[in-house]
Length: 319
Image (cartoon, rainbow, N blue to C red; front, side):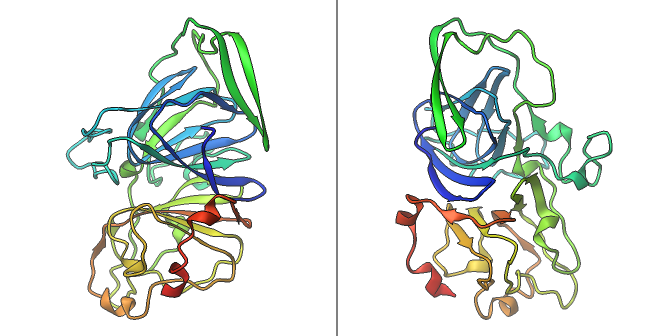
């Protein structure tokens, strides 16, 4: 994962984009948890605790210190994550399972976990949570690799070290503890509907130092007779707001140039919302088919140097 492009970064949080067709080297982040959202493609994530197959719509949470490697699939077509039951929603971009693998990665200098309000005093997910333990996927079983002279790229802060081990680090015969990689597919999360517009944290998936990770999924829209069906004009003040348009109908930004895979960032104090006339045009809409990821930041996020070359100069003019 040496070829990531940093979109934005702050004191405790960084957001990266990565596209891969080849296997990554073994990698360990020694100072931060990572959460990778799979936009498209399939991969097998190898860890010392076992392997996990991942595909479109998956959040892959890898705690700090876990040695792992990404192996993108070279097979085209097929469904990466088959439906668990007939009522399961289709994951975003589920048909886009061919190479390359496309990831958006969130790196947090602290734990990435379920929000505290979803957890009981014993650490179990409550019944009111949008997902439960049965929705999480874990490594299949520890694996052992008989190899010598294996190098692990270890990141610590802004620097890195290449550590070459005499024996392969995948020599685990068992493991215990509270830190382990797991996967949650966004299609397994139950959406929230309300009579009137609810604030974004209602749809929160994960909490982390510096930000809340929120996902807007297909759902019934507000059903009060006078409800406004699209987010109204607003200003965020506590930190930056980053949106990833993953899939579906992005009705709140109609004719703005936003499309699947687009990322927008709004610094504090910049008004944003739907274009003129959209609130009236969507008054009769009953549901939405959007899949949109929102990083609600608690701090300033400065753009990465390479990200500046990807800016769309026409997007600000759509406001």
